[in-house]
Length: 94
Image (cartoon, rainbow, N blue to C red; front, side):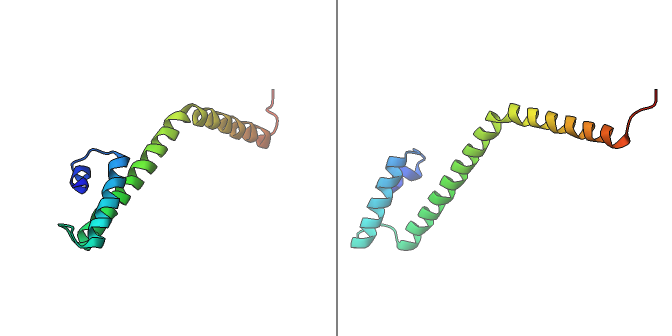
């Protein structure tokens, strides 16, 4: 039953853990209304969604947080390139 609750999109880690445990226990005793393949497919989707959500959210938050730092870094790099170009061309005639 807990497996059905998670599939309805509650998004709770506690319910996902409970569904994992209950589903595995039901399969182990042979009383589950679903088979090993269905349970493994559900587990695969759960792992995939967790990875995409975790990595995507982490990356997005880091990009937003470091936006100003990246802009400052790019400005300093551009200034260094300009200074290096000026030094390579030598002094300008008056």
